[in-house]
Image (cartoon, rainbow, N blue to C red):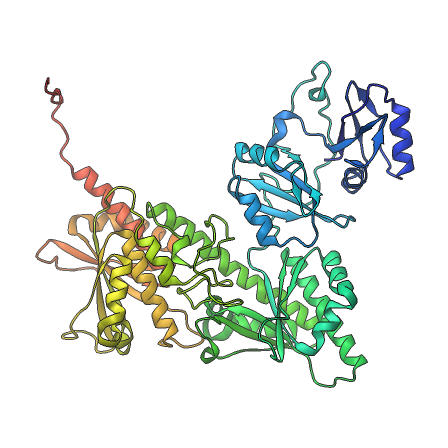
Length: 603
């Protein structure tokens, strides 16, 4: 991306004119200017110089009565799904930018680019070429906070170069080296993290972090290429204030380290003697995986970074405060390393859940994931924000409201979801979900209100089986309904058990589900030598068991046992139902050879 295209060039312009302009603005170039009728080309020594030329000259410098337009030179064959958007107002919220970009298609990545200008620059990748082309047409030159946006293509380096053509831009295909870190069809880095870094800082240090007239926080934002929101108006009178940092993983960590250094300097200046630990806010959904089995993950982070880490108790959680406080004590350097490791684990958990959710949307036709309230509206593949929004700064409990800041009430959004019909008429399924016996009251609710509401909103029949002849520590919940209803009902049951503390602070909610399959299809679920069931377990992370030596019931069916967390159970159930659907299709009678299909009756 080191070759520049210069448009709106006067017929009187010469190579010497461009030499003078570039020399005047101290912009080096690595080759001669190729001046054509109405436009010109030039090579820059590196990407940074090319960006400077675009920022300094495009739309700002006049030559022979015409204002020059400068952008990256991209041959038509290499114009694909990637755009660069410049001149973005620096105070623009990421959420607003995301919403604007989403109007024109599915955004796969949005990366902030390092520049020396006051305005922001992002590289955007859309899912399809026509979406990128539409965004280019609509956004280029559009006004935003008195700034005209400049949009240009980023070349697709994998596209086959065109042969030389007579005249025009198509003739210049030699390109500089690809820009480091640019999106590509290969191992594309995920630049802006979908999970922001959330910190808690003592209120007395907020002024120092902001600085006089906001100078300090602007400097931090610029140096770390981050978007930083200080929620100083939230929780008036509180001893601590939350800070949200949007950036790459590296940008978030750099901003966090800089904020810790600012607080330490302020503490020295004000003779504040108490220790200032790093406090990171993490949604409760991820805490179990952060801690790890028997606390191994957390202990390893402590050992590797030389810090002491504690986590706030579950009792501190409320419907509108789903975050746990991770307190890290140690030197600034040690705390910074611990933050990197903690957030790395959180992001891995988030991406795993998102992958599972996206697969669910493919496995359950018509499932409205956004209406379930499990993920923020800004997450990839999610729809627009829901209309029912909790109080400012509110979040939601696991599987209740949005785990990443709160987009709407689970039940309110579920009502709108329940009115949306599924594609076609999927078959009803029966799932037996086993819950702790002590949790039966919480699932039923006072005078049966909770289970009635759950049944109504999920669109499923939900009953608690009698306790006779069962493990006294467990009770069976019988759920009957189509795939979407199963997803909703089981989702809420898993969440309810977590909310009511039936699982400890270091435990992830894992339940066992039973589904019945025809005895002749059990072998297909197992596969030759157990191949299918092993692949199923590897794919879903659930434990799937078809007990041997089962006696089929009166309907000639046997049980398949599925154990795991919510997403794992759901994936396993859907995959098994796919196998059963294949078996049913194969069991359908085939027409006899030579048989003619019935002719339509004449009217």
